[in-house]
Amino acid sequence: MSEKKRILGMSAADKARLLQSMKGEVVQAPPSRALTRVVSPDLLRFDTLPAYTQIAVQKAVGEKLGVPDPYYVCHDSLSQAEARIAGKRYLNFSCYDYLGLNGDSRILARVAEAATRYGFSASASRLTAGERPPHRALETRIASLYGTEDCLTFVSGHATNMSTIATLFGPQDVIFHDKASHNSLIIGAKLSGAARFSFSNNDIAALRTLLEQHRHSFQRALIVTEGLFGMDGVICRLPELVALKKEFGCFLMVDEAHSMGTLGEKGLGVREHFQLSADAVDIWMGTLSKTFCGCGGFIAGSSVLVEILKYHAPGFVYSVGMPPMMAEASLAAIDYMLSEPWRVAQLHANSQTMLRLAREAGLDTGRADGYAVIPVMVGDSVTAVILANKLREAGILVLPIIYPGVEEGRARLRFFVSQTHSVEQISAAVEKTAELLPLARAEAQNFVQ
Ligand SMILES: Cc1ncc(COP(=O)(O)O)c(C=O)c1O
Image (cartoon, rainbow, N blue to C red; front, side):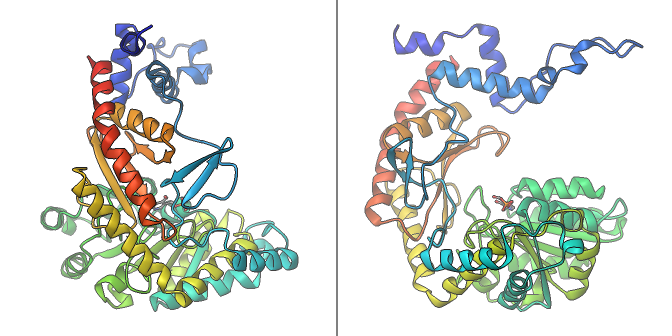
């Protein structure tokens, strides 16, 4: 069977459903009967849920394209600039170990020591099971990075955002968020019950208009942004956001998941990048899962803010404390980020190299500023999935970002650059991407027609 036939071998209905799903439209399951006294058996099955139908359709598309599921791939061992999957070596651009500290033998020794002393688990919420020295040591250290009064760490970066926003704000309040904000920020805003308004990525004029129109109708107001946008590699316009928050009487929250370790000479994030004072921002949020090679998230700010979260944020109060050994891992990573500044310098150099080479090769890197996250804009989701698969076959690991991660039509491959990549590895990845993109586009075109 020819390649073309194999790709086009879907029924028209299946293909329509697939394309609908790739465009981000929720694919509805067959309508079930209206609720009567007898509950339809359809409503007792999970496979009639629209979420499942969407997954099933996307998997069917993948099968028709001959593309294996790019997600949940099992790596054989520690993945840095290179990864091993099922015994095969890959150039790896799919992990956010920005400073190459994950697996560092010195950190491992400290983790082992902490595990020996405190065990593997915090065994319950810190409220009930108490704390271990690495918890407060890590929080004090992060607070000192920012120059804030205090800091609180959660077991999940996602839960940090959700819990914090939903705890602090309510239906009488309003949240203005950048459209490119991470899912955890948006879900937090939804959960809070506050009114929500979004503005296009980094569009300060649009935010001003929203503030002029709506700020006065609510009690408290929050402006939400990311330091370095994780999907686009774009730095937020922090000084202008700070000015607006002052002018309109709002709180400002910055998610530094991708900017801590990647921005500023010392890696201290967007605050260092713009040389701002700590109190320019009310809520500094970050994750421990990227530069700090651990797991969880943090909020740094005033001691009152931390006190509120410590007693009210559900993701902290009703969730297990971070394993002390993981707190130690992040603490050690901070030590090495500060004592080995060449790591940050190397990451900056690598990122700028990748951006320059990609542009020279004619790849569309969107508005990326050249810090750790370099997207290659592809357009439609089908092309992105095919291209990622072709690269994987060529020994290069990079994940496609498709709807609902980004709006349909803005699908991309997202390259995470690390300090550990060599220039040769970066240029090999760029070269292959540029070579395979036209082939992926042609294959996707065949499929869509
Ligand atoms: C901007 C941003 N915020 C929050 C999170 C959630 O963090 P975690 O994965 O550590 O839970 C992520 C995850 O990648 C992120 O990119």
